[in-house]
Length: 327
Ligand code: NCD
Image (cartoon, rainbow, N blue to C red):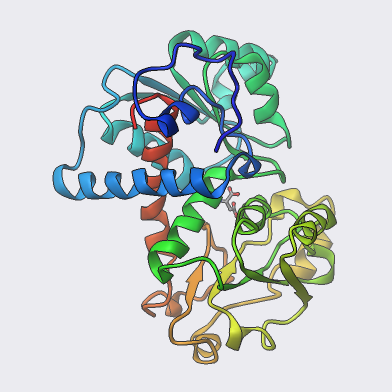
């Protein structure tokens, strides 16, 4: 369930109760969801998948406009939100070169947001500062969706990651998930670990000493009695891993380039790594990868990272339809 944010879009449309819970709401953090809410989102995502395979595009959001505002580079998140909106019959104002917008003249985020909501029905925001989406949401009357706020959260990625696990393994409860790589700066793993804590999972964190999962995430999960262990090498946990989630070392977040150089190649998944992994495990990555999974692994049926991107389209279609009251 998403926390009510009653001042936005107070006129709820007719429809079922769950739909009303998401209508007009911001999506800022995975903390907003419970298992019922997730079940609903994934049910809608499943319907979206069927519709896309049957008819490609349809007119559910005809006449609706999305403002896609990206202050940081993006390929998948930005284009999947555009594809999601367009497959639902809506249209998109895309601002991904903020240097060519009034941001380069010194316009503040609240002013940019107040501008875009004059023209759009929903705003997707990616920004280098943690908390930027929450700030934007305070000023916006229209729903704001966090598409990554610095090293903070990436809730829509975590939703699609969880949906991938569910679709690929058929369950989340009882699964052992190993998060590997840059756990300090990687916002996708911050959101995913929190979301996984709604399920009976075991989580292994594998990272270099300087890139460990932030203690606040570990403490939050501890309070929810999630079994968590930290490691610096993969060998010990690989044989018991059901989901190996690999991340890129986030070069852009380092102040000290020597520190980056010292950890950038800490882990590389190769066909040999996969030999030691279970036959029924999956290998995930939010992408982009920059060498941490060798391309020779791509043809392994357990390599789920390309399918993961496709699941993202359906989850983002579901989210857009829900916040715009049409799911
Ligand atoms: C991730 C991000 O932007 O946080 N990419 C994505 O959204 N799929 C991961 C990354 O940049 O490493």
